[in-house]
Image 1 (cartoon, rainbow, N blue to C red):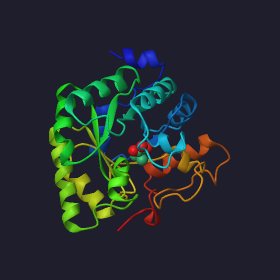
Image 2: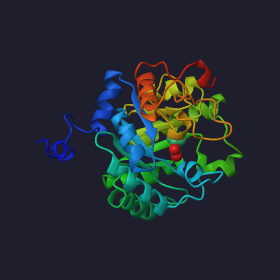
Image 3: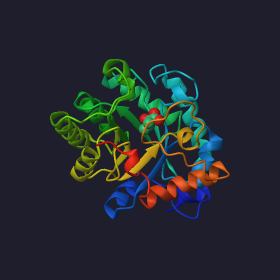
Length: 276
Ligand code: KIV
């Protein structure tokens, strides 16, 4: 019965989609972080991060680009494979990069690569109503999907910068409707980036699936941040929602443990990390 558990040599089962849903139902905040290599993956796992994302933010924090646009499926597969080797308990999600899910067949082929070669347990893609057909197609083939709404960094050149989304009432309502449509299409998780607290709260209340926020306020089911931001490795200006957990701790492991604890006890995000 616990074959998967025994294989990983853990005293408890690894996190899966059912665990994430149960955490939402029971009101236990889900602590999530990005990781891009096996060493940091092992560290965030040891700190009891529930979900690890191989984000296309790797284009910025690993490769040094200004945006996530140059990241390829090969890049994601490479980093996901490394991260998968470092994890024991955490649930592994990997991003589908820019232009890797423009039509159903292509999306399925790339999602299969990311799962089979990269070892991811779920793929994440950016988009609202425009992605319902793709999400439906992936879900029909039992590919677990996280739908990323709000600020969509792959659209940065179309939007004209990294800006808070959903401040206008009609835009906010559209986002709630899109989130519901994506859930109905088969999305297992919704991720909200850079939206006012009220929008995060509304979408979280409207959905049965877990809602993970990054700059989406305190009322979502879980929080995610870019690992290098919380460890203060990122140079230059960081977004408002980032909290530096390294400054009060002597090791990266202690800093990540402090982040997980702050998500669990809801001391992160504080008002200064949120948008209205
Ligand atoms: O690519 C990424 O790291 C992400 C997070 C910012 C959620 O999508």
